[in-house]
Length: 417
Image 1 (cartoon, rainbow, N blue to C red):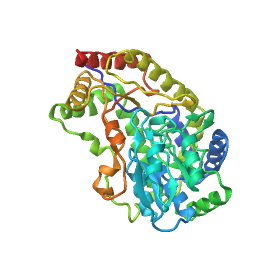
Image 2: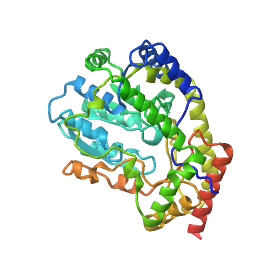
Image 3: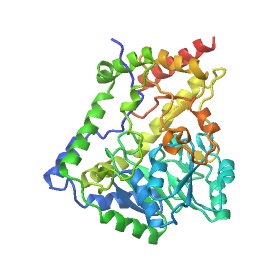
């Protein structure tokens, strides 16, 4: 039987269940001392700033915006390639969203486009270190300095990445990090606001400390969902459960991904689960996971290097480009090959051979009805939707990464022929 390899891989502690059981045994599933310990460990790893945990990385970003107390209607600049929910939360905070284009080679915000969309109402720039590659922070910080703008980094994909030797998340006024199941640090949900200004950090903490704790049922359900996700992306389970759905979807040109991600909608009022505190059991998992983060990152980077060596000499194929001075942590590995229908056919061919790849992991918000009418430049973002995202995550064995690389090379070579 064909053993399929999932496009997604979670970073899992081998003793996760033991950590959870010990937390329950101490009566510290919801509240406990590890929350503060985790925040301090995160601060030490970042090298600067105050870390404040939150129920989601996205809502940590919202709390920073609320703490800034910007005038209603102030403009905030996002990249035109990003997860829709972050700019939507900026709108929920009373701001006007504007979209700058991205460089389709790096998938990161284009500083030239940022300069073009600025107005006298612009107050914030959000450089998103997409797929794990840092943005051109020298240019971004220069623009912010010249126009007196606040920089809030979106580091949801990029924990562990560095720009000229300095860790992402420490360049601006604040930064958001996400700990969802598939992120570089998997706490089965949650996030952190890393805030450089102590006065602003104190405001963010006051907002968070006024929130209710989640119910024990909510947390247990979250951990159960994480456990199920871990199980279903194991190759042999994936092969007999989710992969047949993907295989059939590829045949009929359906998109089952719509069931994996949050429904696109206005976020006013904010969902109840957003407005809760980060529970202690997830901090316990996060503390243990931080000790393994560098090893996981190194393995993903090694897998990416192997993929680049395998695909890099193919005519018409563009492998990821990492500019000098930047450290890529490869939350996603993106390759350009043929465009349009031929590109979609390549995805189908890989799926039929047991390699689950995809064509877009994030959104182009300017093309969504939700953001209709927003000022936007997005040609580069639309070009970026033609990239193919190939699994290279840390959980793959040497045999599996070799199989992924060989299959993708074969499919791309045949397409070229």
